[in-house]
Amino acid sequence: MKLAVILPAAGLGTRMLKAAPQKAAAPKTLPAEGSGVSRKQFMLLEGAPILVHTVRKFVASPVVHDIVVAVREEDIDWVHEMLEPETRSLFGSLKVVAGGNSRQESVENALKALDTDTDLVAVHDAVRPFIELDTIRKVVEEAHSTGAAIVGIVPVDTVKQVSGAQAGGAKVRSTISRERLVLAQTPQVFRPEILRRAYDLARVDNFVGTDESSLVERLDQVEISVVLGSERNIKITRPGDMDLARLFFEQEGRK
Image 1 (cartoon, rainbow, N blue to C red):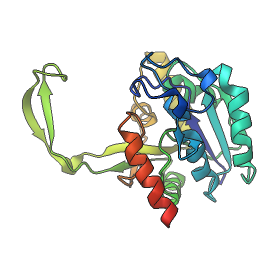
Image 2: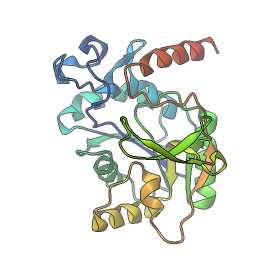
Image 3: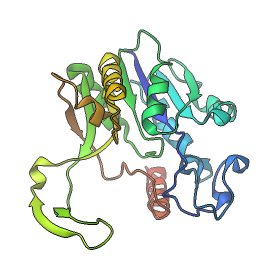
Image 4: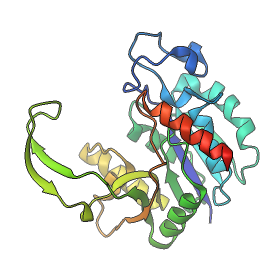
């Protein structure tokens, strides 16, 4: 089985507001402080960019063959130079390709770079560096069996359906049973032909999804399995997430 991992890393990270530029790799490529933008995938976590920590997890997984990272075109050379030493032990290869203006465009561009004999493709958020190797193995095994599988966790908070403005003034309309809900994480793993069909259909319909599963769900006769993930598999999105990330990193170092 030949598994390729796609890491979309071309985003500008608009939710990581006003993070200090000295806490990011390659500061010459970053917007100036005060712009309200920080490229979270390159922010430093204990001395290394978050993207590097994420890549290391997949390099350490024995089921991974190739890694394809999608970044902004002007970042391709220096990101490849940064990641090449980290990926020398891969069974296959590292490719750094031009991403797009959205996650969806970046993943679609990365799909074009896959080898024709790729059996499975996993898409993982570049800013989820705490994915566990056992979770990678389980979701890949499930996708190998069924064709499509994602990682998810059961919500612990009570979920309300509301109407009105989300930022204030919303009114509760109902309580949604948690028994039928999962919070989607990554990796999300599919047979390449399934993911390509999903992207082709989305392009025809001008549909924009929030993850790969939301695109694949629109296909007929494709069911997506869910593999239980971990609350540690956080997506570093906001400044406060860095505090939790440092704690998790310290805990991993004790193992």
